[in-house]
Image (cartoon, rainbow, N blue to C red):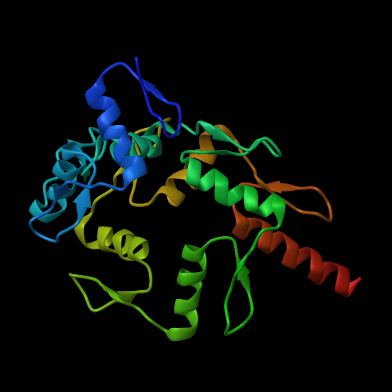
Length: 227
C-alpha cells in the first residue's frame, strides 16, 4: 500500500496516491481551454467540458429529462420512485437529498443565520433568503418563451411553461393520471392513500388539502362569533 504522508490515507496504486496528493498541494494540472477553470483530474475536466458543449448524456427513462452527471440523474429519479433515504433523527421526516435534510435540521436547531435587511425576516439558507428578497425588489428575471409572463424563480417558470407544452412528467403511482408539477401529484395521491396531513387544532378534524382546513377554520370562527 502507498500511504499519504499528510493525512495517513492508504492507496493500492501509486498513481492514485499521486492524484490524491493534489488535494494537499492544490495542484490542478488539467485546464479548460474555454473558460480557464482548472481541475485535479482529467475525468473532472471531461465532465466540465460538457457544460460548454451542452451535452447531457444521462436520460431519465420516466420523463426523458437529460442530465450532465449520472449522480444528478440518480437524485432526480427519486422524484419518480418517491425514495427518501435521508431521515431526520429528531422527527423522522425523510428527504430525497442530504442537503434538504441538513436544511430541515436547522428548523430543530432554530438556526436561521440569514437575515433580510428589508423586513428582518430570517432564513435557514442563503438560497431561501435570495428567493425571498425578490419579493422586495420585484425582480422577475425568468420570462416565458411562449407568452409575456415573467417569474421570480426558474422553477415557477418551468412549471408555467408546461401549460403551453402540455408536458406532464409526474405520473400517479396508483392510476394512469399525469400532472405538470409534483405538488399537484402529491395532493392527488392522497385520494388513493387517504392521507390527511392538515388538522384543526381546535377540534382535531383532519383534511387532505390546506384549503379545506382553511375553509373549515373560517366557518368555525364565524360560528363561534355568532354564538
